[in-house]
Length: 328
Figure (cartoon, rainbow, N blue to C red):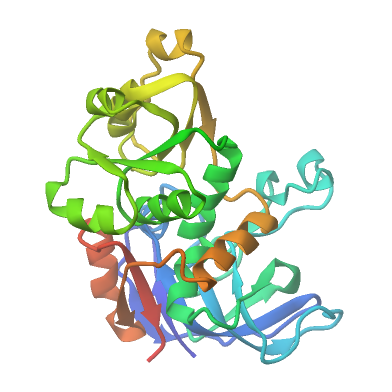
């Protein structure tokens, strides 16, 4: 099969022949139809998230099951499925026993513990697969398995009440979906961004208001929940100046600098909560919103042979808003 292979840390992505996987016990082989290219792929390429190379990356896979291994009873050949970031826990630690495999210190992840989805075929544990709603196209489904799943998990973890206001900082690959999920859930939603050129699109995605910083956010009434999807924690700290008392800041973007938690936030009892992908029920819900047309991924689509160009655009922050790879 063809696959996009990263030969080493900081290596150039190469589309080449790679061994087609075979299903072992409790595993399935998926013929990939679409694979989202996430900024986490950049982090892995640069060694910020460690793994062994050479490596096929990609952790937003969707496709069709073509082979099932021994012991698989819940999936069939022909099923339309996708796979999330964490596939399998050790089954023995406290967090696995609590049903939270995503917190397992020895978890097996797509594209790290197993080869990823920027390829014609991918191996996955059957229990890690999620059936895709029939009405949802593959190109729309792929980014939901990381970006959509992440922001919807964060919003659910914040547990907003019906009267509360949601702000989103970082209107990019994650943030444009966070806006839509918040609005689809019925919340007043404010976008925090310095990008004036995005304002019309942001309003079209559902933002009730668009403000440039935390001061303007507070002047507009403040936020009870801040969904921090930006890779700049400086931007998150600036937006946090608009938090209301007893608010929650949900960190989902990974910043490279320290996050400044101020005395003002402490006296307001503002909670700082880290979040990624928090359970399969949230993935089900995230896909359901997309299948009903309430959330739509804005994406650039590339063929597998064009993945080096797609990677460069993601790494340089030029993609608006997600990149999706389809097979040749």
